[in-house]
Amino acid sequence: DAGVIQSPRHEVTEMGQEVTLRCKPISGHNSLFWYRQTMMRGLELLIYFNNNVPIDDSGMPEDRFSAKMPNASFSTLKIQPSEPRDSAVYFCASRTGTGIEKLFFGSGTQLSVL
Amino acid sequence: AQSVTQPDIHITVSEGASLELRCNYSYGATPYLFWYVQSPGQGLQLLLKYFSGDTLVQGIKGFEAEFKRSQSSFNLRKPSVHWSDAAEYFCAVGGALNAGKSTFGDGTTLTVKP
Image (cartoon, rainbow over all chains, first blue to last red; front, side, top):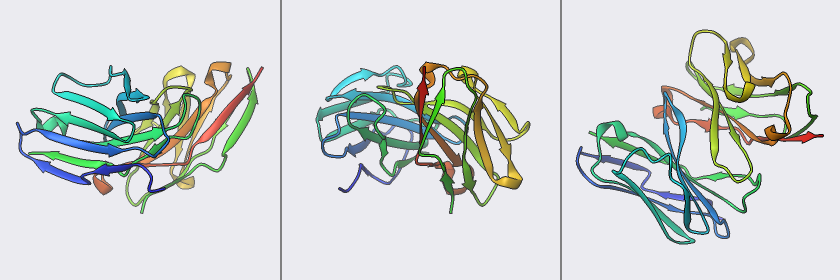
């Protein structure tokens, strides 16, 4: 299995531009999580999906952020318009079930908004 | 390269007993250290973090951790475990190297006996 796949690995954009981050979870996993990581705040949960349905989006910072999961094998996190304070590493993770199953992380997208 | 080792894959303690989860790290500069908890059906939640200063840090839910530079350790402790503490616990190291991207340990699963 290729693991959780995120793209792009790096994104550099100018303030005001739209940014779309992509994630392909591990096949068979029915829970998907989007995290943002900064040096000072660590890892913050933005939103998670169960069976493609958003369960908790309370971590989404503001209306500029949106996430979709149109099917079990794909999810996007969009920032529009982007701002310099959005610069961070964004991780996608997936797992099976709703118990204490292991969480598998993608390699992250390093976003820099200039 | 940065790395984190959590030597204990699974720990079982009785409710009311004390707990210590071990974490050893390798990092080429001053580390930022984190402990996260993943409860059933939930995403990762930050328990506590260490950047500098007092080497004993207090977190949420009654947890604390002690940074020991000489031992490259950041062990998590709780004096009296509650049944609701049953979860998976992750240690992570990050910092100025690698753009602040954290490296996670493989996790320790905590089971609490009545």
